[in-house]
Length: 285
Image (cartoon, rainbow, N blue to C red):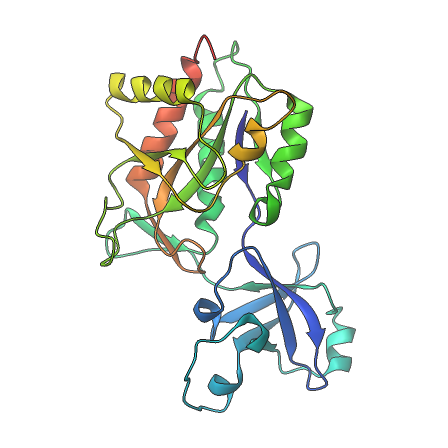
């Protein structure tokens, strides 16, 4: 079972002020400072755009000095509409607000930027892996596109219970460690395998098998130990009597912002690695 999550961090309307301003509740770990001053789309449950808005707070609104970083409770969306006009458009408590940004390449055309690379990259990788393995009829692979990963890994929990796989990989992204503060491995260095995160220690035999495959095929692979965050692998591993699991992904800069940055070489390496692992699965776990 390969699992990549389709959901992204975002916002939900929790209150409509008399002015028509929309107060917000976070969906997943989204930082208020990052989204302040950005444009947003207000959408319905079918993904249709009901109207556009601007995420703001008092000091930005009236050009005052910003003395402290804003908290989520300070933020609101200015749509230019009154409560009655909002109601006519179907905007109510529980409506989704999605910060808006477009996909683009940067100066280096292999470096991509855009919203929700966590985990659109994983979903893309699953699709590409399926294409590459479409002629391997003897492989029994489940490609699972999960939901609600960002708020509790719930889609993986229900999916793995139904599928009952022999082993699983969460196909996700991780935090790039190459800022001017950390000065770690730069993006473009290869795929990542998370040996440990804040919730699980990945299955060591599965990790070892993946390492051997990477070495055999000369695919660059970085091992990571993370002290925070987790992935769908946690709920895959904890299903029923336990399912051997690990995490394969790529590093992403600005991971939970609306303008994330990643490198296509890392994505290609991760795809190639998982293709070879699935063609040569571990015999004993």
